Image (cartoon, rainbow over all chains, first blue to last red; front, side, top):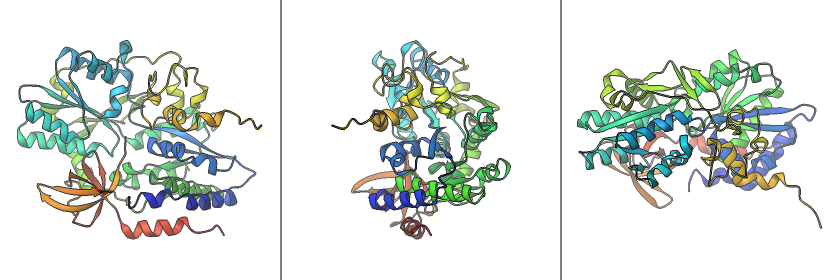
Length: 379
Length: 71
């Protein structure tokens, strides 16, 4: 596939790896956080870690929307399906997120709830058109990449007068989460989670542009390099971060210039601003309540807001006691430091959300990296 | 979750929609977020919507950058 395969070339990866090894200062440590699950997945799947020097460590960030979705939000969707008899539509990744009472949307479906997996909000709209006698609710999650399509679906429903369609909005905002991490005590005191720089979001940045990160570079003195989701993109971004650290710079740089501009997609930003308002606060799994970090549907579109329509209230639910997803999402622990990892918690039977999505730190490590932990015994 | 792929626009079909080709697979998507998209352009497709455009010159420049050796 054009513009994909070229960015996965093994020989070039080796060359960038050599450049990183050549330029990294052996007398110091480098710790970079890749915010996005897409980067976490690429690093694990393509074995990027094996091409990095030993004094350079990648810390997995909380940029996987499935992983940061708290149990209480999934429970809200579950109540809609079981108690209100709605047809609940959502993305495939959401289906297996563990909810209360040992349930997930997938298991709820097996018990008879009408839950449909959709590829696009357009599919949810189509279901609403096809079933005018049913309430169709789209359980919308995701970062800024996924938000503009939801906004357009809501506008489309309004223009068509589709009265049986509504959205349970759980969209979250990337810059707010990065700010939260930078202000967390673990990062602030530079002891438990020292971060020297960030690999910045790929597709989120297509929408919001590179400008929103500029404050992190100036205020917190952390370099940010926006990178595409292919393995060569990630490696080049790491090289650019090493250079910034070596030269004492803290700037926003853009490796993903083929798709990201400083201003972003104005059309998408306008659609989001038209349909959504920022919530005062929102609970993230692993991070807790994060101020101004999520979106709600604006009053003009209240008829399409499932929370208002069905008078839903949010009830927070504690995670499984031994699940370390919270600490893993903050970069404090590695997946292997969780007691549940790889025994009771696997991608087939996830206990915590980091094991659900292939972009979650635990699922990525389980699928592609768990045998790296076992020492090779030579004959 | 933020999975998106570059795909070539092969036909504009009206109503802010287009047919795209991705490695031989064709699909109808919305181009409401990139109204400037034309036939032959590469767009970044996510959940049935083009969310941005791909700049071929910048892609070539980035590939060239990968091949550079450290000084």
